Each structure stands twice: as structure tokens, then as C-alpha cells.
Image (cartoon, rainbow, N blue to C red):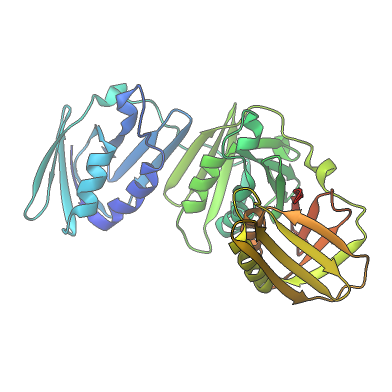
Amino acid sequence: MKVNFNRSALAEPLNLLMSVVPSRTPKPILRCVKITASGKTVRICATDLEVGINCLVSEVQVEEEGSIVIPADRLNAIVRESLDEVLSLKAAKSTCEIQGADSHFTIYGQEPDQYPAVPDFDGAADIEIALTNLQSGIEQSLFATAKESTRYALNGVLWDIQGKKLTLVATDGRRLARCRVSLTSAPAREVKQAKIIVPAKTMALLDRIGGGNKETVAAKLVDNQILFSCANVVISSNLVEGTFPNYEDIIPADYDKKLTLSTEASLSAVRRSALLTSEESRGIKLSIGNGAIVFSGRAPEAGDAQVDMAVDYKGESIEIGFNPQFLIEVLRVIKTPEFELELGQSDRPGLIKSGANFLYVLMPISLD
């Protein structure tokens, strides 16, 4: 195999592939990428056996077909540190040579036949969605997934497909984010009312795909896997097994305390009131009364903080405590200048709404 690469065009897919390559694994070959040159095209793939990426590399010149499996970190480091515009890669058996204008590297790899198969996208798509729509939905849901949970369903994002609407839902048991986005076209009949759980890692990869505003993501369900195709990238992923909570039962529908707040001003108030919280007093208190809301934080050994904000509210007074980090994370992803805050009693969850397609449920915490 002999291929000439544009170094910058090679660096982009490598950065994406590196997020799949495991740093530790009992199977050393999984720490490698497989490069295959065929015809006029070059594909690079990586997998950790749960998620796989198959990238078509642009701006290449294939002089000789073939394939090679080489350590991903070595190849990535060479490409990253090189100053050359063009890198030449030559491979024979399990040895790979990479040459620049003033550099020459020899890397020892493994047998290409031993590398696990990484699926490509074949056939028609079950779902199509604009890349910008999907990445917007990921931004407004992924942050609420559980980072580590024995309830595996919470480690992913629920895809609830209803006609031409895709609802993305994530929860870690203490909060829940729900975002609705539109599909490009009506999905295939068998997935018109499907519910699947896509791993958080896969959702993060989809959020990293680069592309213009006109790019479309095609998705296809195959057994217990989902395949995504966009631009020159195909991502394959196992689905999360388990039962996702019935999120519609969690969303409060009977609240009588409602107020509209500035997103930017509220984010600033939460950040400032949280400056004097501690490990023991991790929460901030929202005191809502006639025409005002007060954000306050207190750390017995350090002091206290208070931020006042005028609001148009004439209802019953209420005091409620929240984890400030959970408030900061949701306020960062709200895309409207204002949002609605709805409350019941101080021991019931808070409800945040932004427009018609985004809401967030947050459990309160005790500040006693």
C-alpha cells in the first residue's frame, strides 16, 4: 500500500477516531486504527467493540492499494507534530513507513485480517435529520445523562420517535432534560413509534461531526445497533439495553407558581450566589416573593452571598433549594433570552421551560 495524504485532511478524522480508541484494553489491536486504500479512496476505522467509526479521508492520492493496522496514538502524534503539507504512507505486511520532507518514521503494526469488522452504511435510511437540528438536540439533552450508573438505561439518551418528531430525553435520577427536534422526512414505517436508548458516548461523537448547515444525518437500525452516516463519517453503536423511566410521568403538570426570568441574568445570579457554598452546603436557595427573587448561598466557615432580581410575580411566596451546578448547566444550553420557571411546593421538582420544545425538571435539595 502506498498513499499520499494531505496532512490537515488526515488530522480531522484522526481526532474523531481517537475518541473511540480505548486507552486500556486486554486486546492491543483495539488501540490501533485500520487504514484501507482501494481504488481512489482511503478509509480509516476504529472501534472499541461497542462504538465504531468509519471515515472516508479526503484529499488523498492512492498509488498502491492495500491495508495496514497501526497504533492510533503513534499515527496521531506524527500527524499532529508534522509541519509537512503532504505525508506519504507506505505499508508492507505489518510495517508502515511515514515520510515527510525532512522526516521518516517506521511503525510496527498488526495483521489487518485480525482487526474487528467496523460496519459501513448500506441501504436506505430509517431516519433522516438535519445535522444542525440533531446537534442542537444533543446539546440540550446530553448534559443530563448519568455519568456512572448501575441503571444502564440512564447512561444514554432516549430517542422517542413519533412521526416526524424526535424527542431526546436524558436523566440521571435527579434531573431530566427533554428536547424535541424535527426530522427531515417521515421515518420508515417500522420506526414511526420507536423508542431506543443511544449511549452518551455515541451522542457525544455525533455532536463532534463537522459539516455545513446543509448536512443531513441518516440513521438506520440493525438488530441491537444503530448506524449513522453524515458527510464522510459512519458511526456504528450498540444500543443501551434496559428500560428508560416513563419520563412523561415525571414532568409536573399542575403547578400554580409561574414566572418568566432572563436567561443571562439568572445564570449570573446562580453563579454569584454559589461562590460561597461549600461541600457541606452545596445548594443555593431561591426565595421568591412579591416582585422579587433572591438567590442566596451560605457556607458556615466562609460567609454568605445574596443576589436580588426583580421579577413580575404576585403569587404565593416560596423558598426552594437547588444544586447550583445543575442550574448552571441548563441555563447554558437555553437558546432563548427568557425562560419560564414553574414551581409547586418546596419539596417538589422545579420545572424550567424554554420555547415549545425544551423543558427541564430538577429535584430540589434540603438546605437545613
